[in-house]
Length: 109
Length: 111
Image 1 (cartoon, each protein chain N blue to C red):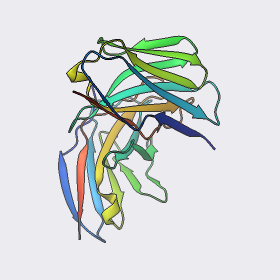
Image 2: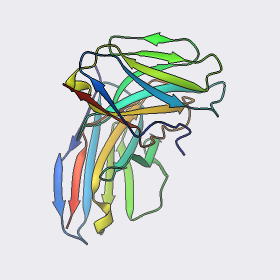
Image 3: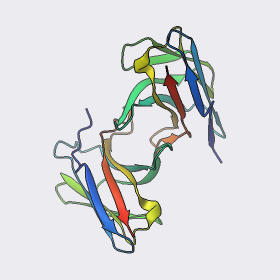
């Protein structure tokens, strides 16, 4: 019961921005949007999270629409090492994280 | 800083054999602990979580069990492995409303 919808795969040219969309139309007011990524054969890695406002850290930016029904993770300058499966999760901080199947991002040289 | 360990990193076991995977966390107290399984090409499936010593909640009924004998130790077990138990097993911890941190995983192949 992932509560999010993501495209199964995307390609991005190396050095360009990667924009990964996520729909979460049933998100509740107290639920955050979290993004993780999983590089092959490794555990998922936390990227960023937000509630209403756009967020930025050293890894990525998170843009959340005003109605909070969708968001976009932006990797500003994709590198080959950013090739991974990216998971978008809605989370209220109390229940457990439920991972969907995510978006497989392939960065092309 | 907090770290999470899992072992072994890889494991090949015959059908019907027992299983014990261990996860330990350092640098935090009273974390929530989680076991996930990821089958090949699939998303993560939550198997068990624990909010304290001896407290285990099961998300999916199956032939696996979990135990938490110490605050920062989480063990995944089976008495008799099935072929369908093959997968990538991930332990994770979380404290409060912080993000969840994952261990390096154990790749289990049941033959």
